[in-house]
Image (tube, rainbow, N blue to C red):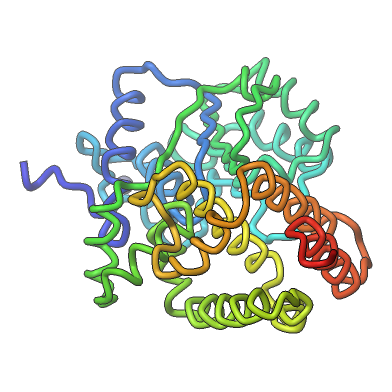
Length: 334
Ligand SMILES: [Zn+2]
């Protein structure tokens, strides 16, 4: 069976999903609109790209694409005329004009072979009118066109769009497998790897970035400063470190720490994310009840939402307000 292995050197956790998706195509039990629900940092782009390469290949061999035909070559060089990837930039939105463009493309014959691929790599980037236009396209699907859509939202909303697609869930690999992968990436501190994985929703790619881009040190510094400020009953001391950079990520870390305190409150010690910060977690779980911890997380999430969604807001002022509010919740100010 060795000859059947698909080469996906970088991300071993994508091998099985690849096989499953291709097999569905082989037995013709798939759907023209394929929606993948997943988290960031699993390399889903690569999965879609490989499946597309197989769909477009002119000389497929079982579940493998040939890598040699004209179509495979065009895909490798990023010039395939029947592969249409939308939303390449973070700030790009998909408008109704884009959908019109897609419709135009899909009603023309493929330029190579017989298949065409439309890849919308984040459905959150669709404007409301684009979504409606896309729904119409999916209702009367053009021939030989395969749509791949990615949904990163972690809430299970079953929108009309979802109901027009076949939904596939791409989960992060098991912790053991991810740890093995990180070790192969020459990251040898197992404890650090495990914490990084848990902080990053189990995504090995994000965990690797977290370690290599200095976020691990930033987190250490934040919690060190945080602990001091708690001892002094003065949370405002963390304001500079919180507002200087990566503010949203730091808010996530604080929330994860508070979740840990709740876990500890319910005696779930094995499941802790930040198990290197036990002293800090214990402070919260011993001194505060579930409702106070929950309220703390709620206010932090609200602050995060405002930072993200209100254009031109004064970050520092908003954070100051939140820290003062939090001091009250934790009864630092009498
Ligand atoms: Zn080929």
